[in-house]
Length: 565
Image (tube, rainbow, N blue to C red; front, side):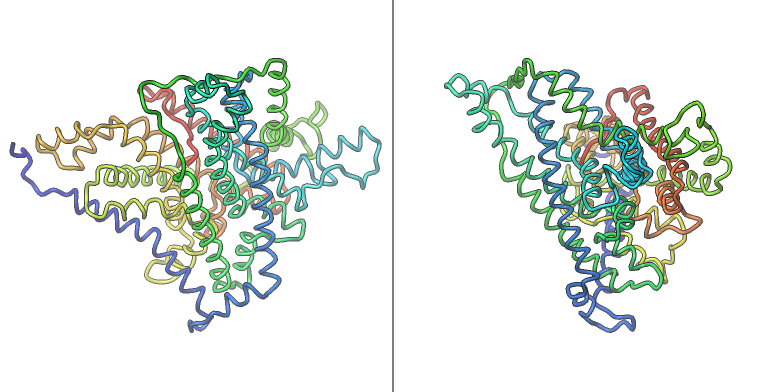
């Protein structure tokens, strides 16, 4: 059959344009980063920056501190998250869905906001928990039970908001293990412990190891929590040290040299995670598999639930309670009561603090634009790669996933070096933040939509092509409508990510381009914890509202989920 449309097919030029955009997003900042790392202030080639990096204690100590924090965080996350994942996925734990929802809440909470909440709870002098300890024990005003401004406090807070990564990987893997395998072991005489040791644990081990690497990576590249807790304690991590190198007088060459090892280590960890997850797996030969057989906890059901709730006190209940308390208290460090209850903090943030309106405006503009552009890029790229639509589709897929290996602080350095000179002078505008947010969010959006494309059979598109449609017309009129749930989920996921992004924004903002996350960080520098609490709760409310409203859109109900990629 001849095509009804005989006009020029724009699909190939547009796909090529998308490939050029992806190259510009990734290769340009990384090229400038590499260039600056091997040059001095006069532009001459040198390796002195790397030599100083490994010989100067001021630079070497943050690197060792970062590796120690990341290792301890990874171990703690595995010890806490793996048993919780097993309890939720493979036992008759009461309220298991509630526990999953609470873990999701801790995942959605920005780590820097959690760090500020723990300032309210565990600062040595003014922390609510320390005040309660002194009131109950009669201890002196100089004594304290907790000190969040310490190495231990930083590891604790990072672990609180990193363990959901391990939990999700372990719980999802345990959910997918067919019950037939364990039933077969039982039929052949295997007891519960032997079945767990020979069947369940080996199948879940790759996910646990991958989760440990993800936790290590998150702890290593995090900026917000170390900046809030480590700097007052008198020590640096690698991300805060890179940030400090851009303070006056700026040392761009040294910052670029310090960012490259972080980038290379991130790439190595992601490759290791890929090999671990891809090395072992299982498939079931036969028909429909049986549901996993839940382990009966018996008398331990409620103690196990209490244990899970106690764990969730740290990332959810206590921090959220501290933020609520500070929002309505005249003094953020005092427990709210009839005597000190006030709405002034809310009035101050929204009517007296001039930076709030600008930050909200910038955040919503960037959130909407980033989510729309990123979703469009991800739809086209995922379509091309899953359908193998053009030669070199593997390269396009690589470019779409490559930014996941770039820590936010490293990307911020690269973009700063790229767009503060002709011909693209974008520093001081929202454009540079838009480029940063699109680059950071693209891998997650691409992975979500690539999974969605695999669920739509190619026959529908082929029928459209036979009737004369171009590839882009088939995508727009056939495939995209069938994937509307995945598309709206991706849009929401990206929007929420923009709300909580700090690492790249802190390197690129100016007084006219502040976003909510940067405003919160600035207010923490000035010690205005009540205003931070108002903004933090507003950020959380918007985050949850986006997901709830998306689920209520006709045709999308129940389909929108925040997925960990």
